[in-house]
Image (cartoon, rainbow, N blue to C red; front, side, top):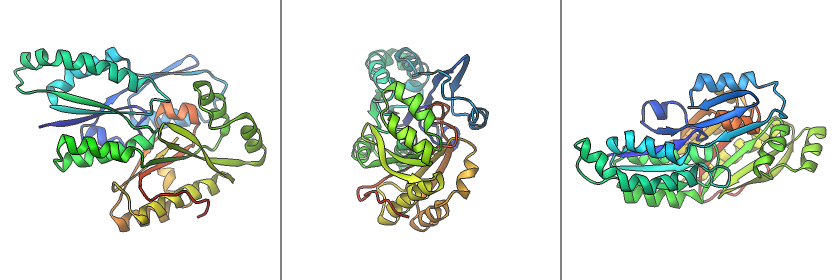
Length: 317
């Protein structure tokens, strides 16, 4: 049985997963003022977007449009049902996007229409798919996707992969430090995100206080507030380091950055995280934050995600 994986644009995986491992993409369309971007996770285009928007004001209206159910149906019937026997469709949290709802809607039509498509193509056997809400954002869905790719490569059975994903969702943690609170306060709040309220925005702006935000089980909110961006990033990475040292449920760490990911390597706490990961045999995947994610969190935002059943956040390095 040939197994495939499809994710949406907000899944902050390195490009190699799409080019070498065959992960399929459901692109998001972003409108920022008069400009329109289709987020296909082209790394150079994404980095350029972050660099060009460093000075853009957060007041510029932003609207993102998830891949529609009709587009998802076309992707599957025109391509995926011919290439795979089973597909896992892993989406960003349903509390932030309509992509999960759209994929679920499309799945019913796909399952009713695929037999004729496969017969016409001379392909025998059944096709199946499952749509799973990652309950997370950005690198949170990416670290789950990386685990799925690893299981597919190891020839794990569909039932084993399916159950494993569902078991890992509740143990997936995505931490985020935005350097500028204005983007989240102005843009993300319009989508119902209450991570940063007016008081937190004003106090943080005046005193250079940066929150460490946590994405977990369809919710996003602050777990700590630190003086200065570097201190917050170091604390975030320190928590990831301790999680690695305690043992992860999947041997992967995903890091996303709203800019050129090369910058991550010089950030405080990264060297210790990388050393701990190397010692534990944990892969560290670094990618540019998606265009859509960057539009709502602002340039320079850093995220890190891992899967652990032992993790407890600590406000220390």
